[in-house]
Amino acid sequence: MMLMADPHSCKSTLRMDGAEIDDLLKTRVQQSHSSTLLSTFSEIVKGPRSLRQLWRGTTPSVIRTGLGSALYFSILDGLRHHVARSNLPPVAVVVEALKRREEHPSSSVPKSSNLANLTSGAIARVSAGFIMTPVTVIKVRYESSLYSYKSIMNAASSISSTEGIRGFFSGFGATALRDAPYAGLYVLFYEQSKSRLSKLQKPSFVEEVSTANSDMSGGVAAAVNFGSGVVAACLAATITNPFDAMKTRMQLLPERYRTMVKAGPRMVREGGLASLFDGLGLRIGRKAISSALTWTLYEELVRRAGIRWQNKDSES
Image 1 (spheres, rainbow, N blue to C red):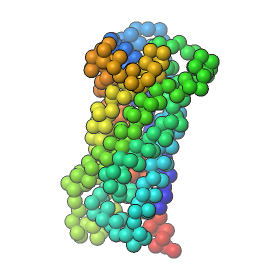
Image 2 (image 1 turned 180 degrees about the vertical axis):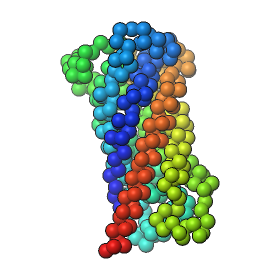
Image 3 (image 1 turned 60 degrees about the vertical axis):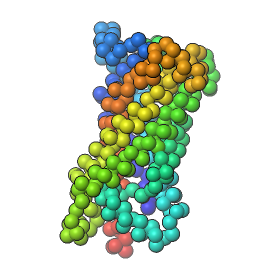
Image 4 (image 1 turned 90 degrees about the horizontal axis):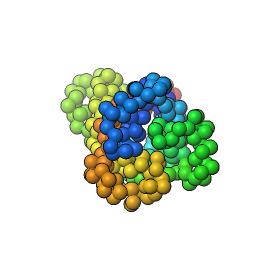
């Protein structure tokens, strides 16, 4: 069953409040190692139009999150179903589905190996990230205090006139090296966490027989999936944060940090190894909630679609 899940618009709406402030503060902290979260927040609050400044960049953020998530899950879903079908003959698909219900009762998505999870997550994220890079560049610069763009269109026009098309893809190398391992590790850690947490809620044989379409209640399954999402986001975000810090510098100051090979060493010289982990706390806070929420919605949509599909098959 091929499902184009769409938890993305829900996530976009939810991100428009606290998450956008978190994103803006992370950009400001990463633009200079000398900036701290407290000093950055105080500077914004004490400045003119403080409330409006805290939500600066909301429009491109919503576009990037909504459209980017839609692209990511569509590509990921297609890859996982393709891998599941190409590796298994028709009869084995049914057997594998039964095994998955036993091992991961909180999930209805295709079961894949660790390598397949790592690879499919990385390919899906980089593909979606490349398409959304122009929006990301505009968003980062619009959030930064280094630029005084009056509008989103003004930002796009300025980048186009001064840097050309290449300017809209500034920092894509670092973005890919951040997103590929992050997404791959996220899917890997997510599936592993889900497997372990699901075993803590192992239903009895009688309960399995009585719950025809699901091994685990919707509420418990959602809790398992959300918890797994938080754990996966924390681990993946910590490992890949240096690439995120380099990406921000390259997108804000492309003349000074032209390539990732030059950006990394220069950041270490100027601010030490700690500069590669600027904004880590803010990134974990944002990723843990947004990624866990998105994946929980994705799993629930897949589960409900699966139940509806099974019911239609039984009726026919």
